[in-house]
Structures are given as structure tokens and as C-alpha cells.
Length: 229
Ligand SMILES: C[S@@+](CC[C@H](N)C(=O)[O-])C[C@H]1O[C@@H](n2cnc3c(N)ncnc32)[C@H](O)[C@@H]1O
Image (cartoon, rainbow, N blue to C red):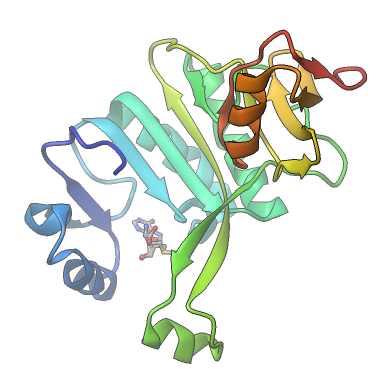
């Protein structure tokens, strides 16, 4: 469970239909006692330790995104988390918001283990995936039969204080081969491909279990394969 210590939730949306749907979805879980507020994202007063805006920036007119990002950042006394679809456009919105918050004195908590510009260039974009169950309605609307889907997302977590950082983040699905694992990582020095071999048994075991999006403890036997870019 993410953030098990959160005691109070305030959920904001501009549309009453979304609030009604959210209430139904939340009725049985931890959000059952949440406060729901119908409001524009620019309007709510007050602050919170953690502010999360999920799949919202893409719904905002491009000219307003900067103002919304600043409002969300000024509302968070601790951490701001932004999540967007894991497409090149969603990633671009995340990168623009990250740049604005860093310029305003913020620090990156995740996924980047640094505050430098994103080292991905060209057609590449930083994104991850999570497996979501599909209910009957979901399957009917999408006209599919599989009971799950792998949702791609881009995200950034930004904080007011510099926190402890991972040394490396795995930014693509690991390639597990016989006797070695290839891991593409983002690190302070840029993007690297690391190879972990079974010569270091514990690092190898950890690498075989590591997933796309996990942090990687970079040890002496996880050597970069070629130059950091
Ligand atoms: C794709 S949905 C995401 C809903 C929810 N955050 C989630 O992650 O499941 C986008 C939501 O943003 C809301 N929204 C769009 N513009 C908004 C604004 N200016 N202020 C507040 N909410 C807004 C829409 O009403 C819609 O519910």
C-alpha cells in the first residue's frame, strides 16, 4: 500500500460526475472518509504534506499548465507527485512541470536519481507500467476480453527538502539472460546499461527479481556496459 501513514485525504475535481464516480469507487476503502471538494485545480485554499495530481495536466489547456503546476507546488508543504499517461506527450508535460518546480527550489525524489535535465533524447521518453485489473464494465467499454491491462505512465515526485536518493533507477524492462541480467538505468551521470552476472550471487539474485521502475543498488559487480551517455 502506498503512503500507509496518511491520516486525512482531500480529493478535488471540477466535475460533479467525477466526484460521484469517485465516491462510489472509494466507498469501501481507505478513502471512505475523504473530504470531496468540487473546485478548479487553481482554486482550493490550504496546504497539504502531499499533493498528488494524476492524469490532470493533460486535461488542462497548454497555456494554463504552468499556473496549475505552480499552484499545486505552492499547496504542497512536503511532496508533489504528478502522474500522466506514459506517452511522449505525457512525459513532455511531466518534464516541463519538473523543470518549473526545480527552478522554484524543489528537489527530485523520483524517478530521476538527480536534478539534472533528463538524459533521454531523441524518440525516447521516461515511462513505466503497472498492471491493472479490468472489471466487466471496463472490458465491455474497451471491447476486450483480457482481465487486466498494463497501463503506461510517466511521473515525477518533487519535494521541498533534498531526500535520500537512489543511485540508479531501472528505466526499461530488465533483460534476463542465462547467467546475466541487462539493466538500463538512469543515474546521476546519465543513462547506463548495467550487466549483473552470477559472479556476485546476491547482486545477481536481486537483479533477476528487479523490475522496470525499481531502484537498483549499484555494486562493484554491476558494471556499466559502455559509456554513460
Ligand atoms: C483523466 S481524469 C483523472 C481522474 C483522477 N485524477 C484519476 O487519476 O483517476 C481527469 C480529471 O481532471 C479533472 N479536471 C480537468 N481540469 C480540471 C481543473 N481545471 N480543475 C480540477 N479538475 C480538473 C476532470 O474533471 C477529470 O475528472
